[in-house]
Length: 538
Ligand code: HEM
Image 1 (tube, rainbow, N blue to C red):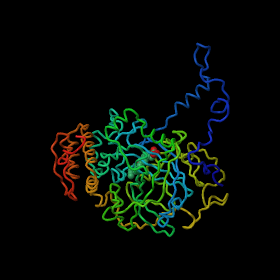
Image 2: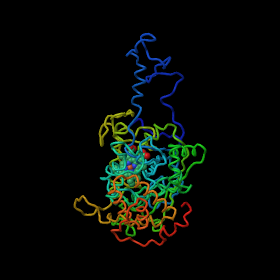
Image 3: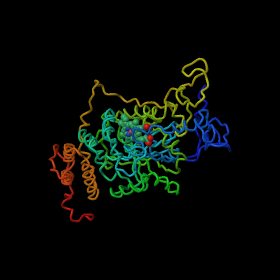
Image 4: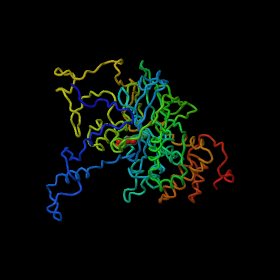
């Protein structure tokens, strides 16, 4: 018994796959019948009406009518590439994941994206970038579905529809397409102050990358690694680009977007085609897996917090090289389906409430985006490990399953045996103790600190970077029509830093409010107004 298809593709990275739909020397119908031409409909005489019996006309137009699939509900615009990942073996003591062992090479497919714009929007807008990696490992597919910003807007997935509704274009005019400069976005992030940290990164140069090749990537959540003995370690994943991190300045991003809305996807494809294969090191920050799941007072389950690299250095565990462009955008970049629940033995999730919602959301949305539950059979989504599941039938089923009894145990055709025990290479959830607790719709008090890390980020910025952040807030809030929203954002900025708040308020012609919370540490640098005289661009 067992599915007869879904074998590993065995395809070398990036090599074009056999063209199943375009073989043979002659033009044919979809059923393989030869046609002698395709430029004229069948008519009753050269100037007469078109006949309904023209099956070729109907087949061609019907297929065309259904060429588009729904774009992703978020991250609709993307560009992707094939590559290879090589493990350094440096994580071998803390994870049994075989693809991280020394020297193991694993094919990967990476999709970079913007979050808010539609599929046809411009590349160089101010936005978070997606950085999603599919590792086709011998133990099953592992997806690291991350962003280029290490924190997220919200702490609980139940707010995800809300933050996206606030960030997407206004429902009446569908404006603006891809920028954060409108009232609903600023209304949301000033009412939900947990968004302050991510928003500050968005107003920094990180949100206008020079190139996908020059972006960091972050798994954002804390994950749990499991070694061969069952011991667990908490980790945060980081991608570090070999080319370094580079951004555009705002004017450059605007001009580039106007002249070449495809700038980032062109840059990626051109570089790979020219043999300038971009590389990233995968690294981890590691933390002891204690019942508190916090490190140096930082809650590891709160996705609005980072752990500074000074406290927990990023240790490299492997190298990724992107070396081939997709052969077909639709088949690969559009149809690829990432999912944070695609895990392999040795990598498990934590109880971050944002991650919990993601574990539900991706498969659910892909059933609608990719037309049913069988999109895992699409070439780009096929695991490179043998698949022997008991899933059957459904829309767009392409496997011809054999056997009579897709359940187990069964006494008819043997079924597919489970092998019990840790030595079988099976994915076994880490047996983490749960706290004794009552059901609540609430979060822990450690989730209440919304300003200390934004302040840390602000204090780590250079003078030039601060100028850019001030200019970004001033410009974006300048597009806000509601005074009450601008004033509420200024109240948030006051809790990050008085200089930041004062400069943005001055730019908007408003009065800076005072902080409502104590600032965690004094700013050691002089106020920007004191150094303005030496600012080269003034
Ligand atoms: C898509 C990252 C939070 C729902 C994506 C993609 C990335 C991403 C990179 C694009 C995948 C691709 O290229 O195909 C993240 C990160 C998050 C986050 C880093 C927070 C740390 C969430 C949450 C939800 C969610 C909380 C829902 C509860 C979705 C959905 C898609 C998506 C529905 C579209 C998937 C598809 O159509 O294939 N996300 N996301 N995300 N994300 Fe998230």
